[in-house]
Structures are given as structure tokens and as C-alpha cells.
Image 1: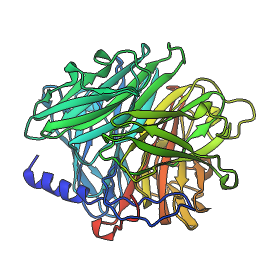
Image 2: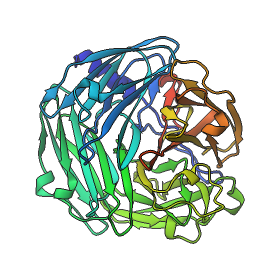
Image 3: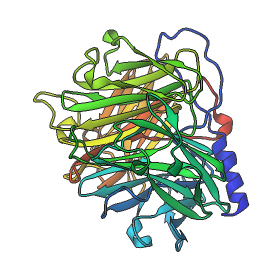
Length: 495
């Protein structure tokens, strides 16, 4: 990559500022701070590089698809370059019409098992999806490398494979350490120390070879030299004591922050939801985990308080807590009580069909599956999720949480792959302060087979999207991508 392109990407993406506020009623003055989002924003009017790191999900046969949506009124030219263990493959170029979407099957670029770098002339949103006979997941790609990446939720039980992809498309070699944190201690296994990722290559590390049969730990990827983009693929075959089956595709958090937010989650007797708080500090931290039921502010459950020793994690299994409403959607807020930086992750798994009478939208379509992600540290006025579908094989919903102190007036619409209006009934909703709403594909009535969801709000909100892969028997609950007008238009209001 040319030095000028690298410099431009660093300048644009290093300027992403977090807009984070806590639920209504929080006391104290908000402090201004600048944070790098764990899921990088698309900056209107500017091109950037995107990196899709994961290339091996622990199964023999799978499909790998890259999904691109333009977020500008001008066409974008995108250079797509695949990378493998031995270096870069043949690059290709695609053109994306204004506000339109396109899909790239990695099998056409030399095979699905490759990392991908995309360089665009205009602002775009990029996600990638893996699917196979036993599961599927789709997650946003990254717009920058990082010296450090946090993965608060990792599983290496007998039924699980945890493949960590380390992508180095840059001109210098990188040396990487992977620190492993348990609830009882921390170490850097010999096999995970000083991993060399040569320039212009991508390397896959099976974490289960070094950390065996653990149902939960946290991993921190630190580059001694150079830079990498790290992404985790955790696959489950359904043979464990808890029959979890499916794929978790997780981009590492590039920053720790005092406050984190998950726009959506759900509870019912056949769902398992866990929140993990990782403490990257050497001193102990106390954190609060607040579950906020949709339309349930009047009966919000008492928050969970967790003490987290230095360099360790603490977990709250929400599915085992009686104070969490037994059915329905909820948002989750996580905050360190003294403002120390922490990292929050969430996993959600389904092991059976929902109980009869459960009215949670889309839950009736899930009989199995699993997903995980880090939380969000940014709120924004515009969000985009790409590569959504609704039909016999898939369904989708958009989950919107308002962390502010006033009502958020929000518009949600489906946009067809050709950039035209793909929604027959765009949704306009008011979200009270601290509350959340779900907007389903059925409400939007998308007219296209594949579409992108665009969320615009008068005030900053937090957005995730839920995808159900019926054919693969899996689902995906991941953050949407914030779209911002430019660094100069951003102001920090929390952190």
C-alpha cells in the first residue's frame, strides 16, 4: 500500500470521536474524551481502506462473502485485494453506484479462505459473511489496524474451535503476543508469544492448541512491532454439554472505555446470554451492568455490580438471573464506577425453539445458533447495515437504543442493492430517553431480495442489527456501522 494511502486512513480514522452517554438519571458531569470506535465509522465524503481479517472459521467447507454499500451520492471505485498465508493474490476493481450495494464471492478471487483489503475512492460500509452447513455469521470489517485488540469472549471447549486471524497487509513484518486472561489469573502461553506475521500476509492461530477446554476466557492481541488487524472466528459443533451450534465472528475492540452499550439482546428459557467485563488495568475495577427492557423503564431491574481484579474478567450470566425479565428484548449498559477503561463483550446462544406465546420479533424463527460481539462506545445520528435479506432463507431486524436524555426521532428505511428505495413502508419512530425499539424487515416490507438498512436520527443513538440465517440454522447480532459527516462535525459528550 502506498504511504500516502496509509497516512490518509490513519488521519481519517484516528479522528473518529465517541459520542457516548449513559441512561437517564445518571448523576455527575459528563467528561469530554476522544475514543476510537471498536467498529470504525464510514466518513462521508472521504474514501478509506477496509480490512476483513478472518479467513478460517474452523470447518472444511464454507462460503466467504464481502458486502459493500456506498454511503455517498457519488459512485465509488473499490480495489479489492485478497491475502493468504503466502501473500497477496490478484487484485480486482469494482464500481459501486451511489447509495448502492454490491456483493463479492471470495471464491471468485482465489478461494474463500483469504483475508481482504479494500481501498475505496469514496465512503463505503463493508461487512463480510461466512456460512456453512452448521452456521453463519456476518460482521463489519475494520477501517484501521491497531497495536492492541481486545477479545473479551473466547471459548475453546471440546465442541468449539477458536481461530484468530492476524492480517498484516502492510510493508513491514509484525510481531504479536496474545495474552490470555482467566477469572483467576493471566498469562502469555509460549505458543502465543512472539508470533511473526510477515509483511503482506495473513496468519491463523488456533487458540485451542494453547488454551485447552475453557468455556470462557479473554484474549488481548498486542503487536510488539508493526501492525495487524485481528478477528476471531469461534465455531461450535453442537456436541457440548450445552448444545451450542453455529459461528461467532468477532472483531476485536481497539480501545478500552469507561462505558459500553449493547442496543439489543433477548431473554427466554431457551436462550443463554452472557455479559463479560474485561479489566485491562493492573488495579481492580468495579463495574455496573444495567439491563434496560424495551418499553420497560418503569420496571427496570436492579443493576448487577461486578468486581474485576486487574488483568482479569468477570461474567454475568443474564439467563440465570431472576431479576432479568424472562422474555423479550433489552438493551445493556456497562460502566466502570470510577471511570476506569474496561472492555465489554456479549454472547447470545439459542438451543431450542422459543416457548409458545413468546412475542419477541424474529425469535420464533430461531431454533439454534450463537453470536457474540464487543459493545459499542459511540452513538451517532446515522447508521448503515448492509447485506440484509428477508425471505425463506433469511430475516432481519434493526435494534435502536437511545442513550440520551431526550426523545430521539428516528427514521429507518430499506435501500435496494441498486440504490433505489427498497422499502415500501419506511418506519418513523420516537424512542424515549433511555429506551429502545425494534424495527423488523416485515415492518419495512423491503421490495428487494438484498438490501441495506439506513437509520437516521435527530439525536445520537446506538444501533445493532439482528440477522436470522434460516438455512444455516444460525443468527447474528452485531453492531451497525456509524456514518459521520467528518471529524470536524463530531463532538465528544461522554467517556
